[in-house]
Image 1 (cartoon, one colour):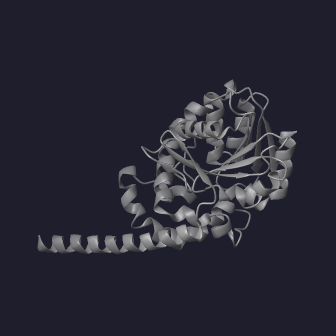
Image 2 (cartoon, one colour):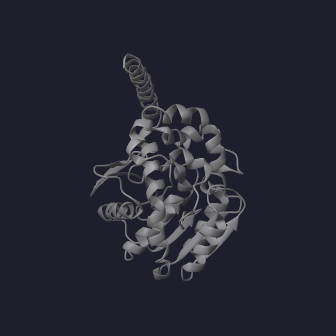
Image 3 (tube, one colour):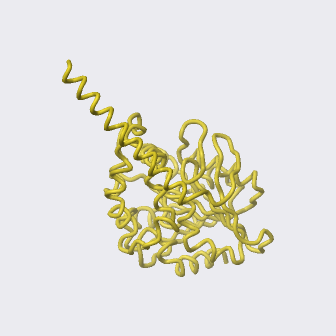
Length: 312
């Protein structure tokens, strides 16, 4: 019994040290990457957003919704400023990500779509084009199905659109029981992310290089925070059931939908999430270019040209 108590005490001490170290790292990340915009209160939390471009722009407003382990800086890195030259651009931190906050249980894809729809209503954003990247593509599709009166069109960049049988190795560290995710988040996840984050980022960008300034300018460091780990665990655990329901309704979509994919995408299969989905949505278009998953960061010229073509 004494030996067991000693072992438990040692584990508790190690856990306390790791938690304290994690807290220090989080404080440094928050200091380096403060909120850039404003917040709007919605049911279940508050959403952080950044508004760019002229309020009286002639073109439709663009609402940009990021993917998993991400936040709005994935768009402000290169694409948003270009489009804000002649469009009103609203960058959204999805609920539970970046500087957005949730006040109740974690929202899945459909619930996030409802929260963003409510936010856009409170902000007076009418008939926007939803620009969804990766998991943000799934949220954009859910929003269009649940609130068909709201969006004008969908422009989806490397979107997550179908249930997947196997989690790509980049995200396997997030496949843990949700009940112990908070413990892992405040003890092991940050040290592991610090050690392996470079390799994971390389996979996410593959075959393209990771920009040297992405940690700050692209907000990449926010992905290693405990809150991001816990939200990532939740989204991976709940995504497939939600996507099965979502994908079964694609034939109901009646608004313009355009999809852009990189042929070398490491995280999501362009055939499954691009070709199959475009075929299931009436009138949808699919464009394939060179590059990987982070097209709006690495291929901004091509992504801007595609998006402007969609807006025409």
